[in-house]
Length: 604
Image 1 (tube, rainbow, N blue to C red):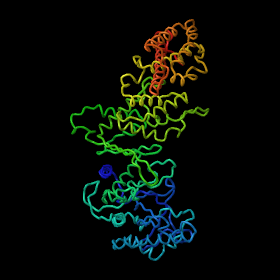
Image 2 (cartoon, rainbow, N blue to C red):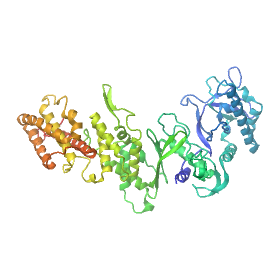
Image 3 (spheres, rainbow, N blue to C red):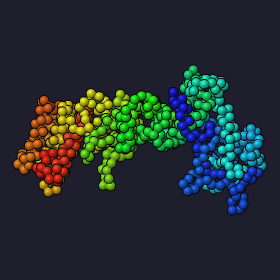
């Protein structure tokens, strides 16, 4: 179960005390052991000291008491709270706001009284309570730039009051009392042990930890059943989900810690995925998927290829890999995906991901791997401008990256939605732009949606692939090459301003028969010119046309479905990459004093 796995991971993390959270603290009240304010302004009056400045413009990050609160009269937090609670600063100038600030301040001081009752010999508690009993807090000068929502902490004789052991113990007891279930004791669903049960999960997922579409993030609760229509038999909160105090405090603390660690999260437009291991090791699995760094991919392959003589000698098994994908709906957490598999299986899925999208690039000698985020981005709109070209950020489907990540983590048997392939085919047709990310994604989707193609769709051109879509794509690339060879400038090697690819590619991959027949008729005059001016190129290209038409065993198909169009694009691209690689190799051979005859596969 998800909560169990989070709790089990707690010993591997440096967590704050129970019901504490790392927060930005903007202001400080510094007291001596008699409870007198040590910080004063230019006039000698007691004032707040700022904790902002330098690298921390919003304040200093501290682990402070924290619990999720809501409702018309939200309760205070021990010692560290907003200026409304600590100094009775109203939210606005209205009488209602002033009365609410006074109420909150009274509740805050009452909480301090509880702390002092349990720790009569704690110097910090004595000093803090004396400060408030004398009502000295009402005389503290508040800077003009302070806001009622700013957080303020207290320090006594150089020590943070909230960091004392007594404060942590009392705060845990207070939260357990506030959030405790009416049933009292019971068996916890997460740990299986008997303990004090909770009515609600005390700590939420921190605001900003989960991406939201409008950017207005807020604290979100992992388990929330606050309406009778949501619970079984009309029961609300955790009545049907028995969670003990220990697990209810530890699980969200672990989740917040993982969400805060860059190496353990993968953020997309609408979600975030956190991952961890049963037995932590130096493994950068999600980084290898997100960034496709060669060193990370090599490490992954090496780990899987090492000889394993038994589980006791294996570093990756019986270790387990956990991945949790979350999004947010208002103040509730939405669990999009939960993965619990052996680490060896997770690594094998990652290798399958890389194997399935590995493809020849037009500009590289060897096939390449592509970062996952680039494949998601290429589903968007391509834009060419004088200042630069690229994909328009945000034009891709908002769920694209999350969907691709699920494909990578869940392995080849997890089929992607056909809509991804349709979207990619539509964008290629609309933009007329092909590049490495789009072709890597096209190959990946073809293999995942049609596993039978694994025998024929390769990282480089497979001359034995006889699928009509592939052959038509190769024919189209060959006609484009014939046009380039016939019309290029002998001096600059520059081809025509507008190629048949620019004009007819989208139509040809949808309706190969009429388009290829028309283009073939046009190519006859180009072939005649080539036979006269460049017999070597004419011979090679004419021979390729004959071979491709022979493999077609008849005329091209009249139309192609989305799979056929994708294979057309694949054949076209791989033929171009093959031609360019052959031309580069021939040029290198010529420069090294080899055969200087002109290559038939020269390309633009």
